[in-house]
Image 1 (spheres, helix red, strand yellow):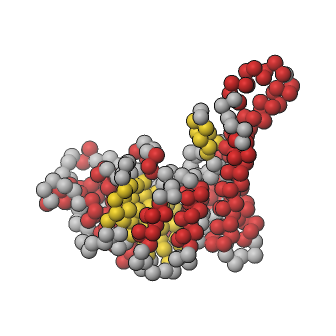
Image 2: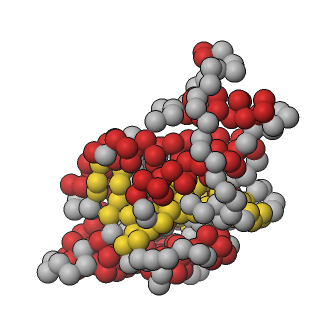
Image 3: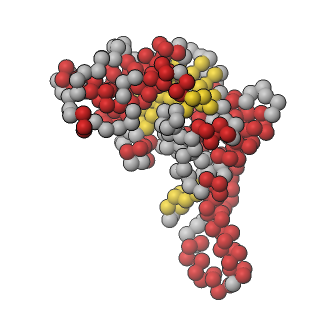
Length: 330
């Protein structure tokens, strides 16, 4: 497998051959084609540059439905490998995307090369199975609500109200201290928090029962337990806390180890590294299939690209920059 640094060397070599411009598209698509040729399964990658600082444009939004329509065109079911790297986003948009993909694909295998968090965890749990490396992580699915004071966990808001109610009932003189904090919230906020929690757990439970545990006698019980685990704010305490494959597997999630098939591991991580380098050329989100049909989200614009013949990835060349300056995941 070419490491992160070796793919960087390939990009430097391609720049020397193309007037100084690295061939991000050609190298990325070649690795996508290689993954498809290895498995014979359709491949869609949904990858974002969220680790670089969390641009709002990296989130899962309804606009991504257009991306799915673009990259699903020309793909024949019933199998799909989805490579997912995302901080999450809208649960409602995720539900629309899952529904759309399930109308075309019966067997969906989800690869998490590094992280699929929040609503992206929900998306991963809609797969028939999830493939994770020892470095990969999912995350809690407890919803986060945007308020005039910022973004906060729904359960945290509910617990804050409960604490205020209890303290003020025991000592009414504390109302003056609580009032400025409580006045920033709208009258329906508690109901919104409760409904958002219910929605996340319901969607994940339904998907697990319908897909990952389809046909099993205890599918509903398993699905409900797993959805409750991922949605338990009190247990995880932080929305950004990573849940590794062993923890997910202990709860009953059907997880396969990426390392169990070295050839597949090489192919998937090479794709991930190639996408990671593409983000240095300005996109913050790329959704692309193995045919080269893609949807590219920049901070303020969207670009689609049509399929072009993929060339074999060039062999790694001697470093064009000192090895000590090459850093990144392997």
